[in-house]
Length: 95
Image (cartoon, rainbow, N blue to C red; front, side):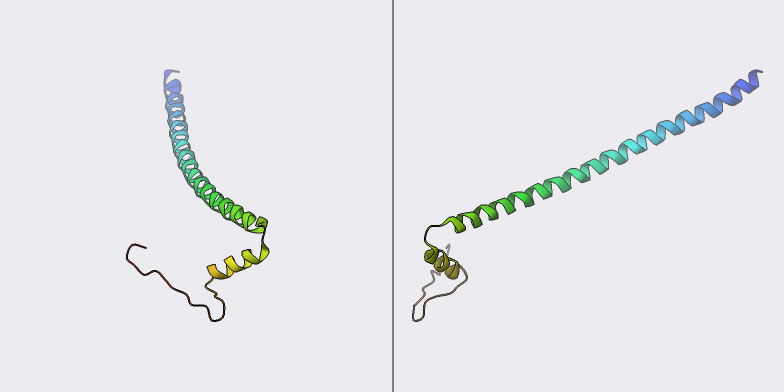
């Protein structure tokens, strides 16, 4: 009768050790996955912040009072000039 209990205790001990190792492995996997998800969330938050800044700038441009002034500013940002206008660029070091 004693041998039966010993045999069952080895099997029970094996399953307990297996369950413990499985739980530890699962915990480590979840922790790594959580870290990856946090990094992705941080990257998306940075992207959202940049898009919000671009959106605020676009709203400011749309709400600007003088439409002609808005178009002129946008054209100058893209490098356009009036016909016959001379454009001077500051090429001093440090600027």
